[in-house]
Length: 270
Image (cartoon, rainbow, N blue to C red):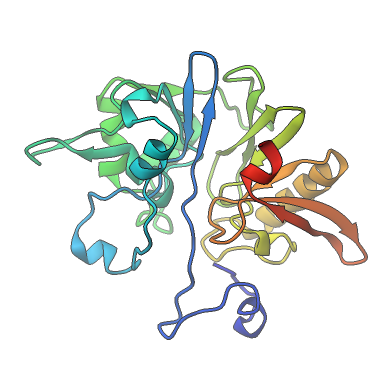
């Protein structure tokens, strides 16, 4: 998760247990419009076998269904599922077993699913490096259901057009090709769902790039451009994988852009 950063340094940010494993979140975002309910990413899901889950040691009391229920919603209320990219920890919950476990079906039967053609092609014809992260059972049933929609992304696209008022996406390519980071205007603030460009608050320093990234030098330059833009415009960053911090703000220091403060959603919006 920390690439070339030595454990003696990164362990101060997110310490490892006796198995050398760190705790991470798979935090999704729910956005309520007047007549739409948009879910950004879906977590890992629960349909993989025991061997698969043996690698990740899922733990804790949180689940997507419980979180939706706490807000008075269910899966059937979701109108749109926006997938930042198609790695299993971001889209696994988009598809579930059918009732008799003979096949797969969308977990959100009333929703439109959103990806882009560039990333869809990248995921369905994967390179050897990412093949283990693009699981066909998470991806192909979305297309087969007829619920798949594409956002237009060209090779030179930096920001997509708006999916909904106040909702567009920043396109980055270092982690995986054509990853989309939602940029959301809400109550006078701009929130950026950082997905795997900045998976946690600990990944803000430029050299802290995940070993998973296919083009780490590109990630580094994308981070630098984004962080300068974010600090200039007072963006709030949403950390999908940070187990301890939901939102963060930035500041400039002698060492570059760094984390300023962290917040919960309730602190900012209630």
